[in-house]
Amino acid sequence: MEAGHDVRRCSRCILPSNYPNIGFDDKGVCRVCREHDLRYGSIDWAERERRLSRILDRYRGRGRGKYDCMVPFSGGKDSSFTLWTIKNRYGMSPLAFNFDNGFQDPSALGFVKRAARRIGVDLYTYSPDLTLLTRVYRRALEATGEFCSACVVLMPTAIFRAADIHGIRLIIAGFSDALEAPPPETSYIDRVCFRNIMKDHFTMKELRWDYFFPSIKRMFGVKQINLPDYLKWDLPTIYETLNRELDFGKSTADIRYDCLATPHSSYLFRLRTGFGKYEYLYANMVRSGVIGREEALKIVEEREPKEPPEGFDRFLAGLGLDRRALEGIEKRSVFNFRTRPGAVRRMAIAIRERLP
Ligand SMILES: [Zn+2]
Image (cartoon, rainbow, N blue to C red; front, side, top):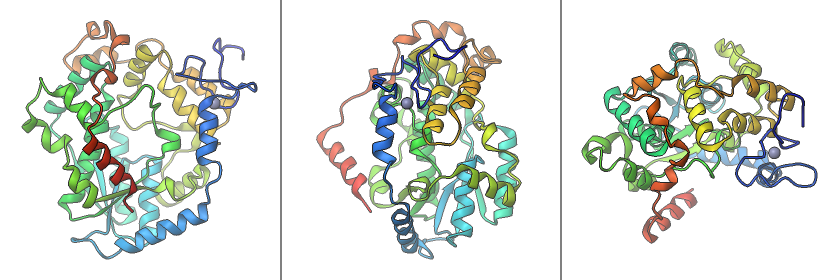
């Protein structure tokens, strides 16, 4: 145990002992670290990159419209580097797609426009009606104690819609499983679960376009890959490239999230689970060698909201709620709305996972 930190933590990453099934071994290393090593320990990156080249060759110059592929572009380091790399290193003609969930940091939005111009790509922005979106966030929060699941369903749908609209068959995202994926023990959503949460509060007509992209098109019409699955995601190189090429103006030390609702969702997450979003996100970074353990502990100590963050009541009011909405939050969960997928759906998912 370190001074100032009264919880037991993994000796390698920083996950605390109240993380679900933490399973420390005799060296104090947690289960998540061991799973990480099994999954990412022996990746042949040269082979991965050859696979990437083969995929890109299949789509280059083959779009039905103007573009070979679409890159979801938030203005964060991962999507910026993905867009730059796909255009400049692989000679693809991408459409940059920016999704505005109403909580986008205005400075990120400014960067998105400047960066798209400098990289030399078309930028397409979708800002769904915030009245409907606010109602969806509110319902999600009331039913499940969190609202991020709304975006977790909305964003991929918006991305697939945009690709479909532009006749694009390949989506290349900068999402990194190792760095960003939330714990499966606390965070889960699929469209059936989402429908169960929303069904008595919305008509399907209201939700269909933004939340339910037809799975048949998703399976056979549009392919999605994540660039960090194919290229070694070396953050110092990424920041160096972005600062040189796009005046990104940030470094590994000031990692920030582009969604302004993150402090609030993080606080709610802690109320429900007893540990913090920043704890698992920074644990991911330590485990992947992006940041040192001590530095991560310091940042988490500073950022992890143990009290309601600044502007929390205003945030709730924006959703038409107040603190009464937090009563009994620890009993709420998306898992209460989960239904086991039927055989056909399980098979469809299995097929989708195996598609080239
Ligand atoms: Zn660990």
